[in-house]
Amino acid sequence: MPRGALLTLAGFALGLLALAACTAGPVGKGASLASVQAHVDAATKAADGDLKPFLALCKPTPANRPRSDDHALAALIAKPAPPAGRAFDNLYFLGDAWVSAWAIDTSDGIILLDALNNGREAARLIEGGLRQLGLDPARIKYIVVTHGHGAHYGGVNYLVGRYHPRVVMSEADWTMTASHLEFRSAYWDAPPRFVKGRDIAANDGDVLTLGDTKVTLYVTPGHTLGTISPVFDVTWRGRRHRVLEWGGMGFDFGADFARLDAYIASAERMQALAMQQGIDVLISNHSAYDEAPAKLERLQAAPQKRNPFVIGRSAVERALDVMSECAHAQRDRFALVR
Ligand SMILES: [Zn+2]
Image (cartoon, rainbow, N blue to C red; front, top):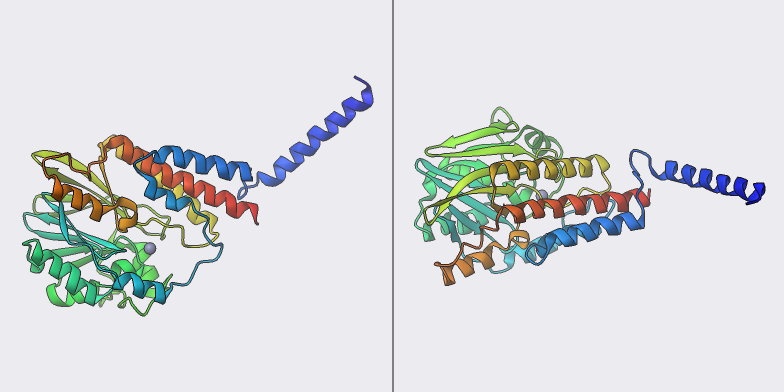
């Protein structure tokens, strides 16, 4: 090869290195259209046939935080709500067509995970749903708010006024709801307020004990800075299962790399923890992901068959893979347009 050609080749290689250095900064990390596609492909593979709803996370999201759309929210709230239902001996679904609350029944009262959009929904779907299921709403002792967006705290003030449960939220989300709400809507009641500014501030790994039940509260930042993902045991037909509720799903915070990095780290951490603890049930606070109403219907139609909420350890692991891969894909999309 002539010397000139060698030099040209060396120059080309140097140019490639320089280009790589440009795209491999702390934010870019070598993002390319191919890397976006590789993450989407990995998520699609992990979702396989059974976890397709989670792939909604891989759709491109806007670079600026969207405002909450009251028109769309009103339409979602107006949709007929799915019936309340029993998913396990000690776990109940209560929700509208969009957002879910879950009731954990213990020997000493009820731990409620989230409180829906507002007091009217809490009255109709939480109080009404519990009564339909033969449970007394006056037994609600704790409300755990998975994160500080109105669809999850909106019904808290109504329930606190009626039954005086303690309210648990992470330190970061108490601060956020007291100072600068990330979203506002006329359809959400005010965030919970207490004389000292907050009620119970949960730290990562805190265990909430009520009667015979322990709920471990993991702080999994990402969707909000203080999203809580509760982990607890349930039983069904004499068998114990372990449940993870992923506390905040979407990337609706705009091109915030630190948030996406936190989300990825939380998903990876909970994946390791799920494997260690043998978690075989994954639920969500939005039924578009866990398909809770359809699973309840199947459970009612064929109660002798396998409980469809028990998706198995490897599916829980794959679902957390989908979340992390989709977050990586979104991170690379934002890096490309910077
Ligand atoms: Zn949210």
